[in-house]
Structure formats: structure tokens, C-alpha cells
Image 1 (spheres, helix red, strand yellow):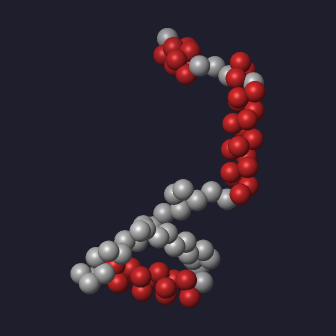
Image 2 (cartoon, helix red, strand yellow):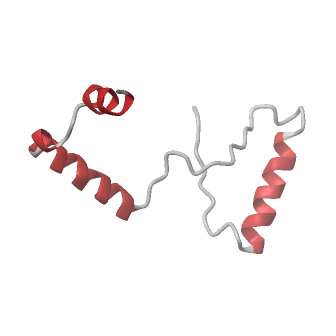
Image 3 (cartoon, rainbow, N blue to C red):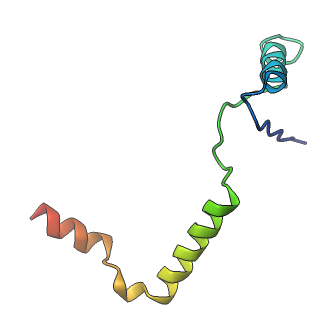
Amino acid sequence: MTYTIKISETNSELAKNLLFYLKSLAETEEYNFLQIIDSDEGFLSKELKDELDFRYEHFLQNHEEFSDWDDVKHKYLN
């Protein structure tokens, strides 16, 4: 089983201390099962997710407005 823990408000002292503690544990042999990944990758705000969903729906409904990548590439490479 794998767990994901998200620490928000990383500027607060409490969050910084918790992250420092977890990182120090992850560096020991006893806690070799613990891995800390410093990334917000995969975490989108609701606003950004809504905007991407809106744009994708617009593309699906109006795909003829957009150029194919090969056409764009050919235009600028020639």
C-alpha cells in the first residue's frame, strides 16, 4: 500500500518543521520505505483544472479551428 501526504502552506514554521523531520527520517536506513518527493506535480488547483477542462471541451467541439501539428511544423520549417 502507498500513501500520499500533501503538505500545504509550506511557508509556516510547523509545516517546515514537519517536512524537515520527515526528510531526516527518510535518510536513515531504518526508514528506507519512506520517500519524500519535492514536487507539486500532479496537483492542480480547481481553477486550473476547470480551465483545462473548458479548453479541452472547446477543442473537441471546434477541432476544425485548430491546425494539425504536422501542418504547423511544415509551415515554419519551410
